[in-house]
Image (cartoon, rainbow, N blue to C red):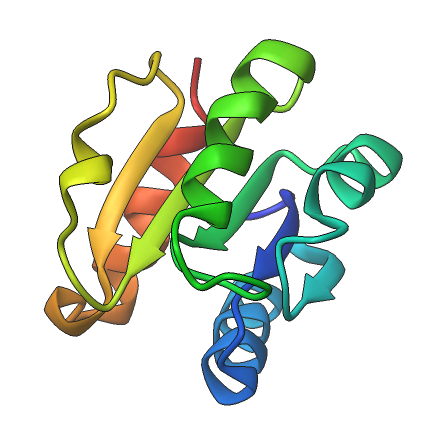
Length: 126
C-alpha cells in the first residue's frame, strides 16, 4: 500500500504523528494532521485524501466527533475513498452501518504494522 494521500485526526499527538510517520514511511503522502474534530470535514474537503484515519472520540466533546465525521464523509465527500475510525475503546456507536470503504480498528488490538498498512490499503479499495 503506497501512493495514497492520507489525513490523520487524533487528539493524542504521539499516536497521530506515529501513524502519519508509518504511512509516509510506506510511501504515502501525509496531507494533514488534526487534533480535534472541529475542522475535520473542512480539511478532508480541501485536501481530498484517499483515506482519513480518524479517532472516534475527539475534542471538543470527546464523544463521537470522529465517527460522525466518518459518516458525513460518506455522504458529503463520496470521492474520498475511505474513512477509518480508530478508537481506544469499543463503543455502541461503532456499530453504525457504513458503506464499503470504511473500517474500524481498536487501537490496542493493532499488533503488526504491516497488517495495519494492509488494512489501510484494503479500506481504500473500492
